[in-house]
Image (tube, rainbow, N blue to C red):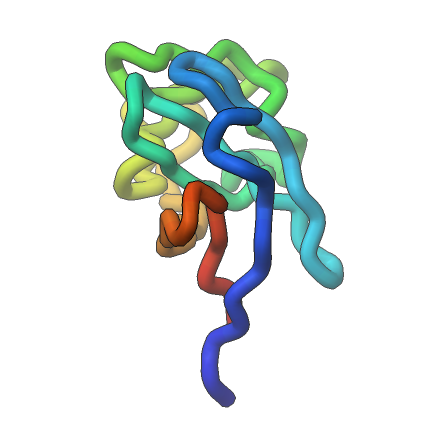
Length: 106
C-alpha cells in the first residue's frame, strides 16, 4: 500500500522552537520545528506508551523529553538518548511543498 501524504499546517504556523500534535487515523504525531528543520515523531513514549510530544522540547538539540519519566528522544532518529526508554519510536518523513508542511504516513 503506498504511503499517504497528509497536510499538517502552513509553515508560518510552526515557527522555529514550536511544536504541535496532529492526529491521523489512530495515531498521534508530534511535529517540531528544530530551528528551521521540521521533524515528526510518534507521540508515544516507548517506555510506557505515555504522551511524548507535550514534554520539554529543546529546539537547539532537536530533542523532546518524556514528561512522565524523563527519557530524552532524538527527534531526527526517534532513538531514546536516556533511560528508562531504550526502544526507538517511529519518525515520519516531512515534506515542505508550497509553504505547507506535509507528512508521509502509512
